[in-house]
Image (cartoon, rainbow, N blue to C red):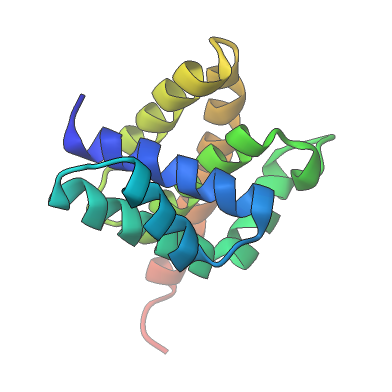
Amino acid sequence: MGKRRKARECAIQCLYQWDMTGSDVETILAGYWEAHRSPREVAEFTEHLVHGTLEHVDEIDPLIAAQAEHWRVDRIGKVERSILRLGAYELMYEQNTPDAVVIDEAIEISKRFCGPDAGHFVNGILDGIREKVSSSGNDAESEGPA
């Protein structure tokens, strides 16, 4: 398993714990690293992803809700919700990671943590978010300078 995949899995576990407990993110991270030793690069990328996702969770959740027809965000399983939040964060704010990689990673992680059918759900939601983010970015570019 690559370092970035490992960091994403660690981030999802921390986001899940945050969602379950509402605890302070720094307390969650400190406890996580106490129990799970990881290389420095994994820890740094994990913390970057967790902080970024939680910094933008109020923007991310409505996007997930808009794509999850007939599902309120609070009814989506907490593991799936953590995966979707992380994936949406990466699609929106991590421009150095190709969208296809973000979605593929989320699908593979969801299959591992949630079961084989979860990948379809995660793929559908994140692909819809990708389209929305791409079209809004293209609209802004095509408008030209103000």
